[in-house]
Length: 336
Image (tube, rainbow, N blue to C red; front, side, top):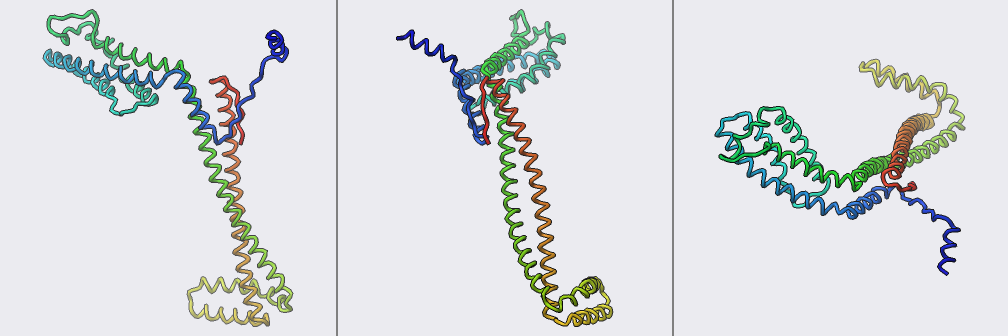
C-alpha cells in the first residue's frame, strides 16, 4: 500500500506552490510578519539583549581603566596621551545604554557610531610613538606585552563585529531594505489617495458648475426668442466697453456723460427688463464658464500627477517583488 501511495506522488511530480497574493495596502504588514519570523528564527532579540549586557560590562571595565590611565598620563605629564584618552572616553560614554529597551536597530546604530570613533583612534595609535612606549600608563612595577589601550579597542571592535555578523547572517538587513521599500510604496499610495479625493471634489464641483451653466444657457436661449433681442446684440459690445470705461475713469464729468450714453443705448433696446435680464445672464454665464475652464485645468493637472505617482508606485512595487525573490527566495503577486 505504501509503495502504491509513493507511486502516485512520483507520477504526480513535484508540488508547485502558488505565489502568495498580497494586496498593495498590506505590504507593510507582510514585511512586518517576515521581520518577526526572522527575529524569532535567529533569536535576535536574545542576541541583542546579550550584546547590550556585554557592552555594558565593557563600559564598566573601560570606565575604571580609563580613570587609572588618565591619572597615570597626567602624572607623567604626557599631554598627547591625555588627549588620546579623552577621545577614548567619548567611545566609552556611548556604551551607557540609558534606555530600558534597546531594539536591534538602535543597537546597530550605536555600533556604527562607536566604530566611527574607534577607527581614527586606532589609526592614531598605530602611527604614533605611543604604540610601543606605553609604560607611563601602567601601574608602577607592572608590564604588558601589548599596548593595553590598543588591545581594549581591538577587543571592543571584535565584539561589535561578532554581533553585526550574526545579524547579517540572519538576513535581517535584507528585510530592513524591504521595509524601506514598503514605506516608499505606502507613501505613494497615500499620495494617490489624497489626489484621488481631490479629483473627486473637483469633479463634483465641475458637475455642479456645468449644471448651472446649462441652466443659464437654457434661460438665455429662451430670452433670445424675444423680438427685442436683435437690438440687444447691436448695442451689447458698446455697452460693455462703456461700462469698463466708467469703472476705470475717475473724472466725475466724464463718468456722468458716459452714463448718459449708456442709458441711451439701453433705451435703444426697447425693453429695459429684457436688457437687465440679458446682462445678468451674460455675467453669470461668463462666471460659470470661467469656473468650468479652471476646474477642467485643475482636473487635468491632478490627473497628470495621479498618472505620474501611479507609474512611480508601479515601478517601486515591481522592484519590491523582485527584491523579495532575490533576498528571500519567494515569489509573490501584488494586487491593487
